[in-house]
Length: 200
Image (tube, rainbow, N blue to C red; front, side, top):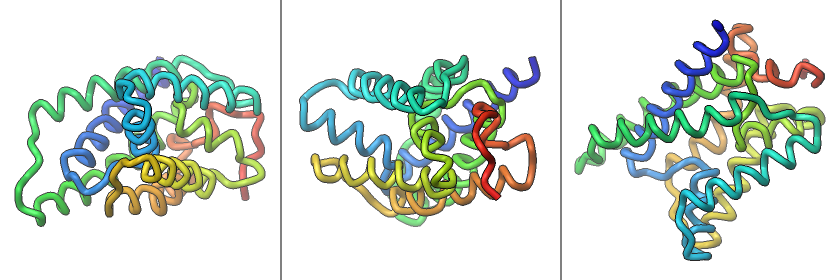
């Protein structure tokens, strides 16, 4: 039961982080940028594209041994609901310095949310599953950056906007989540993939 409580709390935390990042309006994460770009290019609703791409990434990760679990389904649902609630309360500030503050607050909240829900060992969502699928040979801290960076490039090439927040997530979120995992078993990003060899 404790790991499902950790999943719930961590997904809510992640949702708050995503909402803060979006309200900062300084660029979203790479995965969301990709979904937005595909949505713009195909003229399909964001939610439909998000679901379709998510299924593809989870299936690809499963083919490489990263099995889905309850967290795979719960993560997007809880995070999406939390984002909607928080964004219904917050508004994007007009002052640039307040938006920078929101971005600075969003980053550690995002890191705690990602590390916490993966540490629950209940399964990974699309972005994290895609990163874990290549660890090994590529350590999570870098495979996550590659997935986020690839998503940002695809989204940008299709017309989606990027910004400082995108750059921060692409280059720093993976290493910070990995650092949390090394500091506490509570944040073990490989908890959902015990058959994977932990990097040194």
